[in-house]
Length: 197
Image (cartoon, rainbow, N blue to C red; front, side, top):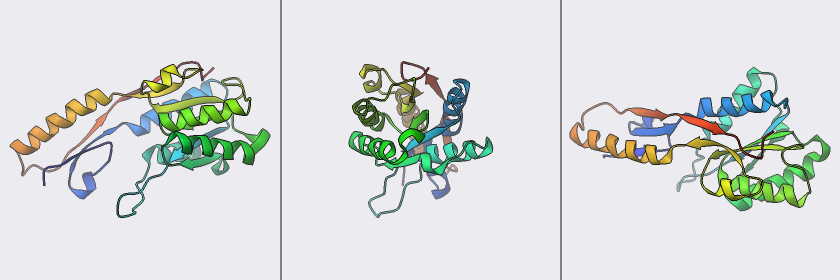
């Protein structure tokens, strides 16, 4: 009965939770692309299912689509999905390259770092210039994106801070089990490296 969900919004189900600020993170990614003069923006989105085969909604994709719609920049044909693994990022990017050809968007937001590494490999195999032809921004900013070449621009999520806060939330829950559930949103920030202009 005492559970804190990390990186999943369980408030409606009656459980404490801790999530990154997906909305402002995605808005900052889109703003960066637009500031670079890029208005054709695609996404490699992630999809996953629970053990009982329920689809886990990805708020990155939700905010990506809604923000682009608000700015009249939404192109559904520029969105490809994988399952958050490097191989799925590689395959999704290969599919995007084969499907879109010269219509490939000039900016691509990628749902997480493993997918971004796979996507970068597919782009390099296709000899597409990064960032001049395609600029890339990933999400999470784990160590791996600093060491690929070119190094990956990414939304930094303070996972250490999230872990500490989750423990604090659990202690409060154990001390006050009758309190209403609460949701904590942790801020993010965009780190620009070599995959953006």
